[in-house]
Length: 248
Image 1 (cartoon, rainbow, N blue to C red):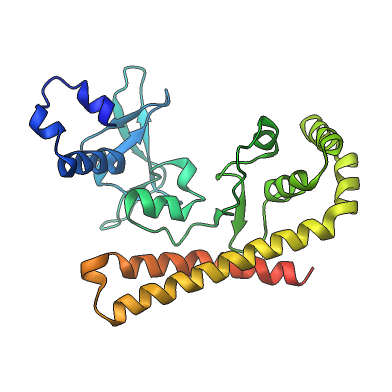
Image 2: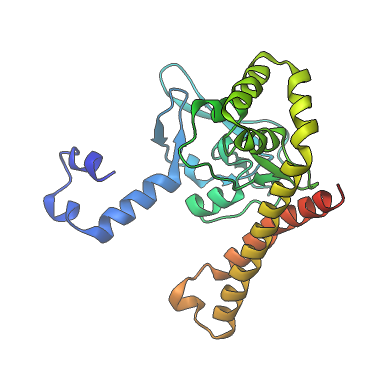
């Protein structure tokens, strides 16, 4: 962002050397821009006033000349807020929505499973290693992509190649054989991961609630109550998933 800012001819050196102004400019752009069809992002005055929803009643439309229009997708009642989806990739990632826009979406039906692979190869991406696909749902169900990635991670080199080949060709037979051999191991691995996340969220909320009780929130973080709400919302999904995994 700083490199891009340096290329803007009308921004003075004094402004560019100010960390506070640079952070403000970055935050303003990052929280108000909209994705465009060509993969870029664009600031659109007035459109940045719409609230986000995972079930929006309006959508943005870019024509060939990159002119932006807003259309409702259903009837909108008098006094009802017009909502759009800020970014489709955020529909299943409440944590990223909070980090980027400072709000939470408690109607979201799923959350990112928060499982990280160090230096993932292309094979992991082929299996669905992506925040928009590695999901834990409100029902406690876990997306197939999570199961596949965790199983693949535990296989040896030859078995990995065979599992990946079966996946990309849609051959469910060999995949089910691997699940038959490693299913219990993968279930336990996933259960331990989810239990860890539930515990981490509990510990985080204990610290946040302590800040509230001591009156530090306004000085340390004005969004402390919002963070607690977010943690409780995400925790409810992981807790339900943990109940389902314990019952297996």
